[in-house]
Structures are given as structure tokens and as C-alpha cells.
Length: 250
Image (cartoon, rainbow, N blue to C red; front, side, top):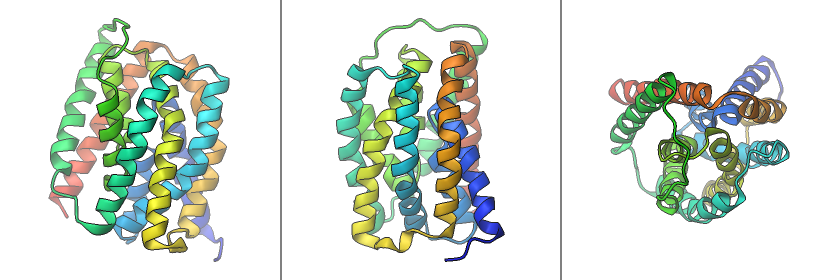
């Protein structure tokens, strides 16, 4: 395995992806998986490689958020367990059965959520309250993350914020729980596909992600709730538009 210019390109991708993910609770999987697929890596192998990388980056990110006191541990317990169950199921589906048909509908749904969050943040409309629908979000987020190469953050983060949870604590908690979700998916992928999923590209993404992880937690703590909502909404709209465009042009 050689570490040429491509390694540093993917290191930059990993840094950017983790900086966004750590600060906003989403987009590492979407950015990294899209970069791998664009270079010709099969979707299952790309998702497997990214989830293997995330076992390390999410550990660093989750620890950083815990140190910054961005984690609500009660909420953490409620989303982590169903998230693990969903991730194992999603990884099995991706390695056994094509699961692409529902992607445009999911992307459209996330785009609408992004628009809603963007508008609420711009208008300074956010009433904090404890979310009621939690466990189903963890299950759906874990499944879609493994089956689609990204989805834990967009599904879980956006819906918890819409229900009224503090953006800062939502982002920190979702990042912390993601370690268990992505590790479960990675183990399932490696069992089915082997260690060939670890390549120069995935190692580059890993290096960049580890460097960026602490900075994302600091940004999530420092930025105001309205600013976080606007940024989360913008990222959701951009990634959903990209996902729909990629589906239509495939």
C-alpha cells in the first residue's frame, strides 16, 4: 500500500468531512462515501471502508463532545441501542440485497427537513423541549446509515432538533452514539467483505478525520443555537439535492 498524492487528497476529504460532522452532527458518511464511489469504488465496499474509518473518528469525536459537555447521556442511551440494531440490519441488507430504490424519497424528506430547520433558525424560532420520538429514529438512522453509506446524522440529528432538543446537545449526543452504531456496521461489513475494505483512500480519510474531530466539538459548543440550525438546514438541503441528482444521473 503506497502513500502518494492520493493519500493526502483523501486526508483533506476526511478532515473536511469530520469537521462538518463534528460541528453539525452529520455528513461524514455522505461526503466520504461519495468521494470513494466517484473514484469507482463499489457502493458496498465504499460504505464498508467509511464505516471502518468511523470506528476511530467517532470515538475521537464522541470523546471530544463528552469533554466539551455536549452529550445528554439519557438521550444517548435511548438512541444508541436501537441504532446498533438498525446498523447491523442495514449492513446485512447492503451486502445481500440492493437497497437503492428508497433513496430519492429519503433524500427529498431530508431536504424538506433542512428547509424547515433553515427557516426556523433564520427566524430565531426554537423552543427547547424533550423529544418524544427517539428510539424509532435510532433504529431508522442506524439502518439507513449502513444501507446507504450515510444517514445516521441527517436522520437522527435533524429530527431531534425539529422536536425541540438543543442543537448543541443533539449534535454531541448523536456523535457520541455514532461510535457504537458505526462499529456494529463495520464488524458486519468486514465479516461479509473481509479486510479488503481498508485501502489507501480509507486510511487517508481516517487520518484527516482524526485530526479534525476535536475542532468539530469545539465549534458545536461555541456556535449559537440559531446558527447551528441554519448550518444544519443548509447541509441537509445540499446533501439531499446532491443525492437526488446522483440518483437521477446514474
